Amino acid sequence: MGKLFGTDGVRGIANKDLTPELAFKIGRAGAFVLSKGRNGSIVVGRDTRKSGDMLEAALVAGICSVGLDVISVGIVPTPAVAYLTRKHSALSGVVISASHNPVEYNGIKFFNEKGYKLNDDIEEEIEKIVLENKDINYRPIGGKVGTKIVVENGVDEYIDYLRQTINVDFSGLKIAVDCGNGAVSEAAPKLLRKLNAEVVVINNEPNGVNINVDCGSTNPRMAQNLVLETKADIGLSFDGDADRLIAVDNEGNIVDGDHILAICGNQLKKKNKLKNNVVVGTVMTNMGLDVYLNKNGMNIVKTKVGDRYVIEEMLKGGYVLGGEQSGHIIFLEHNTTGDGLLTALQLTSVMVETGTTMSELNSLMTTFPQVLINAKVKNELKNSYLEDQIIKTEIEKIEGMFHGEGRVVIRPSGTEPLVRVMIEGKDEEKIYKVAKELADLIEERLRNEIAVTN
Image (cartoon, rainbow, N blue to C red; front, side, top):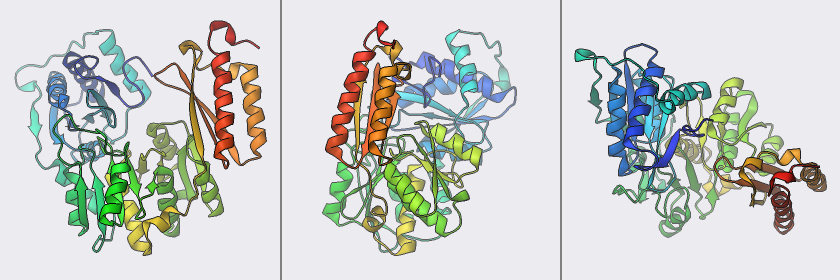
């Protein structure tokens, strides 16, 4: 990744790092690169952050300045933009959102004309124009300047599509929903009620500054409490842009992305719809999912952390289901990115089709305890842990100690001077001790320049 685009678009504190001036340049450069000289439009949507108006105005101006029209769909979930880009035959889609991050942050994320996140080389091309202040030297005038077209019913187009992805309704179900005061605040209650569910909803009154504040998928405690208080059949907790879901079963227990993959993977296999009986996860996927899938005639393919890598693997292998523990779940038959509301429908429909409770489904997979400890290291050395023979030998020693019933995952942070040490196994007390010792060793070895020696 370059200096502008991260693993999920451009992110930063709005009006400080991500300024209107930068948004204009990104819109202009992005539209130029993605249009490839063609006429057409770009779909633009955003979440509920106050800074969204400011950034959208600048971004739209940049896009229109190279002669493309903007289809403005307003406040909609990120996956809605991916869908609406395809529906409206647009050249690209852009989301203004910082997902689960605090309100002071915002971001700009592009989709290509098929609704997929951009390849690294295209992002780098856009980035080069912006960072090097290259003159695109294309300024149409008169009737060739782009215009903004406001679409008022973008949410309805999206939820009408989602309704078609299942063939059951939710009559008789009580569903507790935490909208996180984000982009799904209108869409989730409306869709679930159209499916005849009884909906109890909280955090669906965004005011521009309350997005993700002590609510949503990064703080599912609110959804857990709501399920228990209202005796709901299932709880649904979304992040700010609704591309991820953390669910809650009827007993108040978390149903994370790994459990959702187990539940939905098993149901797709029963319907002979799970291509090659493979589910795609990441290196951080809980080992309990591996065990469950293998016992039930399925396999798992793992990628680097990040839903973009999961999708790349799914496309390469033709797989239909993949995702992350954090709740980014991709049902590739229906959408081209993680989609929290689509996942909510697919998960709830399993409950209806099987006639079982969510707590029963949640118990299909047993989660192995995981311990994550950050080792603070010199930033330029954080990718060098495997070059140090002492660290490498210690990792091999720990893995041998588990005899296949545990594992070690070491992952340098993409943004901080940290090496993340994750150890998984059956004995939580034991793995914490081992993880702490390994993190201490990595800190000691990678603290200064002379550490990376044998």
